[in-house]
Image (cartoon, rainbow, N blue to C red; front, side, top):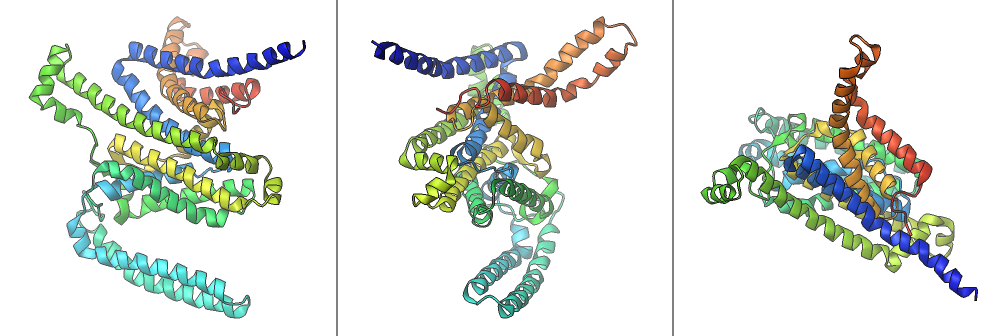
Length: 448
């Protein structure tokens, strides 16, 4: 007699949990549709495209934090590496720069790599003591001097070639879609190097280390003009879909747009963004399927066991550091793919735009609000937080303008509200994060 109500009481929460995901996604879709109705389809598609990229970023962070509990605050560094891969793969090579000093730059990089390998071998093969210390000092200083002697003149020659328009080596001139997996590989390689040295640290020290390494990566991008023009930016990155101006010059497209009642400018812009949306949705679907398969595999269950109790997992024979390195590399690869997609969408690499608030803090808010450890929650958080980040400022401007209109002229409140919409983003993110942590600390779609 008691088994029936017990089964019913267990089934009811499960049914509610199963309905939560479609209902929340339906609510998000309604928000996007209403946004398109009020602000235009072009504006809504812009939000959707960047929302898809943000969802992939959130999935990458969720792999590291939700699966393994790794606190990575260097997200912007891996995003920047993904963007750099787009330049290195898709931009055409600058022949004059290669002829001026390209080989010297490559030789300098090889010498630097050989120096690092030599230091590692000295550390491994020699016994601890003064002999090893002095050997490393002498070899490191000699290697640095030789590397700079070869590298610096090459860099100066490369950066002197038409610095206003090029001044860098360029890329391989390959199709830009190849840059997306290349961005993942470049970020994964950097993550492997970082993880070999930093993953043995405690969680708070790991956060500090990844934060510093992310800033180092960004500093290199900003200051090494030979690599990607530094703060001068790389513009004109090829697009994987027809550009709006190309469509406007296509008579067949213009004729079809006229038949549908659209002018060529509006139709070309919408079609360009719809094509991007299809590509981004396909990548998100692939990443989601792979992440779900990993989550429900024995490997995923082992990762969550390590996350919940490292000591117990290590006592059962699991190599915790090795597994942490695996998930750190995988999550960084996903973030790198998203970084390459974002630069492709923008059509330019601007290292100065990589701010920790936008490319680290906001992505963490997406994961926390959506639901740490749940891939569906990370995707929902990516869309919701990006939608809020974009919409709240113009919405605040509209609300404040109406409030100022009804307030007495010269009121202190009217003066305070004028220009206050710029602070709406930070205020909204803070309030939302506090509400979620208070009433749903595991996120909108919690981990089961």
